[in-house]
Image (tube, rainbow, N blue to C red; front, side, top):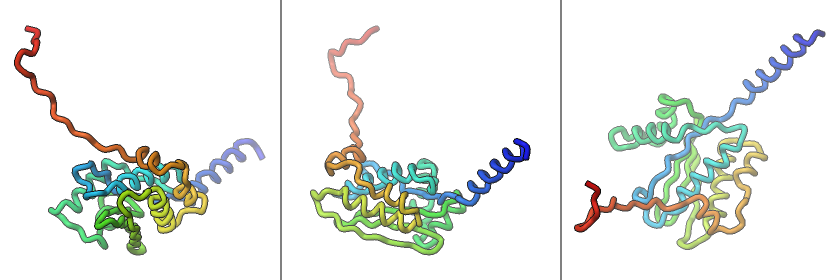
Length: 194
């Protein structure tokens, strides 16, 4: 065998391996600012940012562009065109090819994580008590999402791995409040360069 034949065989094997291992395309929910969060909700943005960083590490996952996801989901769920949840995956796929849409909701001290797949919708409720350490809940929710997406055991371990020991540091790392302040107005006697 000459070296070109060996090179062609190795290249074809690499291409076929890449084609065989198509990553699952996942759309995460858009991040909400403080004004859009429900009373007492601090877990939703932490979970979304945690999933965003950990799913990006997984070889079997390709994340949808967050800005495009926000635009598409905003258009489909804004009230002008309220697409029912059971039709949301198909409606999103008409604009952007995705295999799964992850939705989160926080109501009455309960986090609800929904994973929309072509095989159906899987909903996972997690009770969240006020003042409770949210890291174990976020890791459990991430593990449930990994199971629904059919990720490998190694990738599931990546999502559920506890890398930050202190729960308060974990929350601060993922969630910083968005602060708005008015632009200062000039007051009488202010120096002005003419």
